[in-house]
Image (cartoon, rainbow, N blue to C red; front, side, top):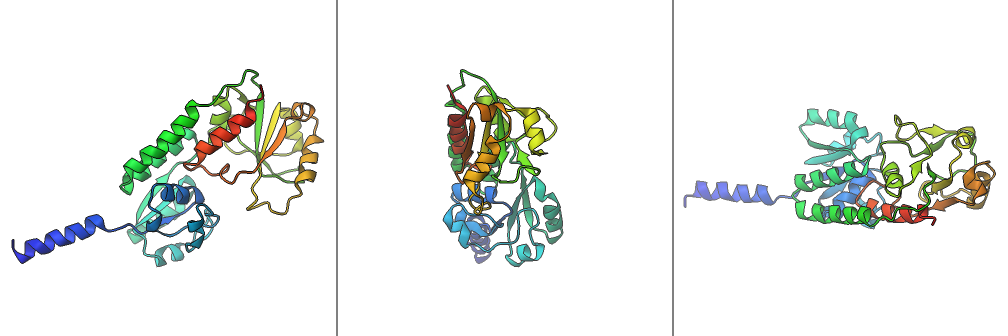
Length: 273
């Protein structure tokens, strides 16, 4: 074997086995990358990437809606992974010849498709299939309610209900979970995935059940008892029947592989038979 041939083979092997330098633009993507076993390839991520704990030690390139381009470039990434709302940032990185991957993480099918695509992109197909199996199993094991009712899922716990109440609408994985349990979404408009309401809108919807997703990371100072009392003060079927609850597991807001846990947790909450 000639020296030239040997060098070419050596360079090929180095290239084939070289690790990526990945930057994640959202907490969800950070979680998926770690779950795929590629956490050691992450060099930076967005703010609020809290899971797993190892992610908290990574450099932060800014908020997940407005990341800092200069900080991204400073880490010399070989791959930047973002979501649909990161389109503008990913387009800017094109001019720096950085490999980019845009994932859609809205519905359950979107999440599954994106895990498969990311796994394929970073050579973690086997690991991705395992995550997909867990999600599929969670969906299969959902028990349908014997008493179908309307459910309103609220993002965030707040004491002031006069405005700014975000709820789960259409084309979002929470809506998928509601349907899988045999219930209906109290918010009927199928054109908005995350509508913003006030207390009058809530009263008009008159949901049979209200589930409030509480994040300790962003709502640490909320008086839980007072906030819940304000919800029960609204004249709704949910208040009348004592079906307003707060769930505060840290994975509930995150469209990652941990959506399998979200499916299990929320289906239990909606299974009122």
